[in-house]
Length: 192
Picture 1 (cartoon, rainbow, N blue to C red):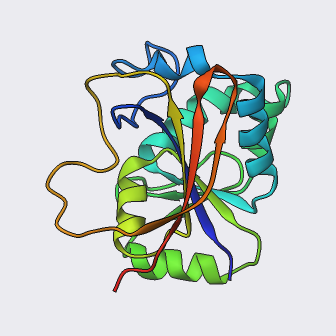
Picture 2: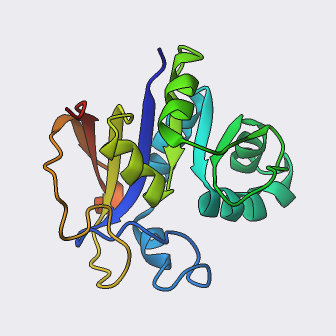
């Protein structure tokens, strides 16, 4: 059975939503000053080692509008356009970006079936709501938090106040990249 691995950019104060150009999301350009070639290589290697990419609707649409038009002229865009993408959505009627499959309906059996369908890992990028759901249902195997040395203040957090349940995680790796980004890679333990 393949593993499902999620990766998120996070600020020191726990904000996870909105990395990218400042005009994409409110308070969004915070990852760029600390992004290094080594961090890009880590992300690229993780993508190359996977069998596909799982995305929520919003991240899928953002990635499609950014990477899709670039074609194969840019190596990261070529990678994103070529990889098989699974998009989880209850509102999309079709996924028309190259190599995309739409997953609707009940999340737990759909993701369980997807995990059983291969041996190489699937990566999940961004998609905070989807990451939260997968963690709650014990379907996420690894959570990589790339913590950037910045306090954003406002924004969406992975772990919002008022969680009802403890979520045990086991640190599997930590690493510091140039410009102060720290990888905290956790194994997610099954929920009971």
